Image: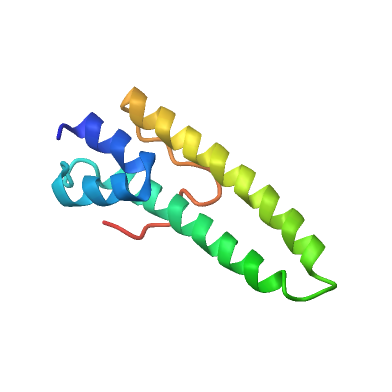
Length: 103
């Protein structure tokens, strides 16, 4: 896959991220593969935290509201990353963009 295709596929689904990592142009696409990985993992962490906190009666409403806000923010970050990949630029997404999991 070309660099631009690999960058875009990394954001589409977790399976796309895996495909971008396995058969894509990894050397030139490390930035977008990392950004997509961080966004997907942050979404999983928010979901797991919300599921755990929803078991506590007093905290469940607050946890649901915070999880919804975080989910919307991660969706916006995902869109920003996808647009950046489509444009061929390397713009970090806010908040989670400085986290490096894949070099």
